[in-house]
Image (cartoon, rainbow, N blue to C red; front, side, top):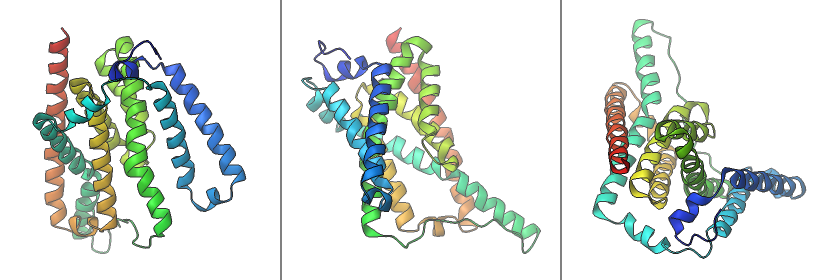
Length: 269
C-alpha cells in the first residue's frame, strides 16, 4: 500500500495482493488461536467468521487511514442514477439466484406428473432458530461479509489483477474466487453476482456501492429464509412463473454486463 496517496479510492487500489494475503493469514491464525482457547467459540460457529471479519476490517482501516474522499463516496450512493442501478442489480441478482430452486421445483412437478410417487424434495431453512446464534449469523452475513468481501475481491483482488490480465479475466478470476466461499448450490449465482459487482465498481470507482448492493442482497436472502417465502414461491404451478422470471433476470444480467464492460472500455480508450 502507498501511504503517500491520500485519496481513499486510490489508496484502496494501492493495496498489494501480497499484503492482503499476509493479512488473511494473520487473521486466520489469530482466529484459530482464539477458537482453540475460548470455549464460547465451540458454541457459536459464526464467532470464528466474525472474528476474521473484525481482524480484516482492522487491516483495511489501518491501510486506509488518513485518506480523504470517504464522505464523497457515501454521498455518491444516493445519486439518482446510482440508486436506480443499485435497485436494478439487486432485483436481477435476487431473482437469478432463485433459478436453481425454480428448475428443481419445475422438474420435480414434471417428474411427479409422469411418474406418480416420484419426486424431488426441496428442503428449505428451518424455523427453529436459536436467537443468539441467529443474531451472530445475521451480523456476519448482512454486515461483515458484504464489507470485507467487497474490499477483498473487488477492492484489491480485481483491482490488482486488472492491469495484469485485462478487465474480462480479472472479473472472471476474482468472481470465481469469491464464488468458492459459498455453498456449492450458490456458487453459480455468487459468480454472476461477483461479475456484476466488478462492473459497477468499474463504472463508479466507489467500493461502497457494491457493498450496499451486497448488504441488501444478503438481507433479502435472509428475509426469504426467515419468512419461509420459498415454501410459497416454489409450489407448482407458481414455480413455473418463478423460473420464467429467473430466466428474464439472467438475460438482464448478460445485457448489463455487456453494456457495462463496453462503456468502461470506451471511457478508458
